[in-house]
Length: 157
Image (cartoon, rainbow, N blue to C red; front, side, top):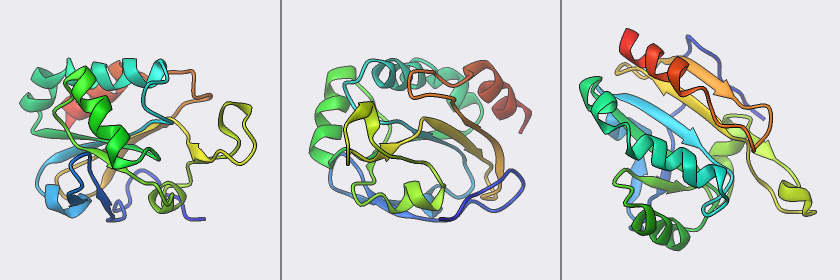
């Protein structure tokens, strides 16, 4: 298992989005990027979190920022999730859990279900040069990230 820390270059990756288009972190070079890892679509807190990013477009646009949602959901599920909540940012499918392992976020036995491996809830802020500037891994999947701290860190870039 790898892990990342503030001040180091964020590892590049490629994942399919809700339209089955292969997207890479490197495609957003020059922009600030928020990686929002969430355990699964349609699970309450995840819905609230993704809608918070949707509703924060003014803050994100003013900071030249792009949100990328990442879960273990299949692209087909991500597509329905995006449509239901009018999410216009990429929702990336880490169905083989490679990126989750790369960021050391594997959450085993999600919701008490043996063998259901998901991702911990986490947010990472990457600057336009690809350097990790802020990160938060919540204590439990039920906890939302501290949006104020995240957006303050974004505004400081």
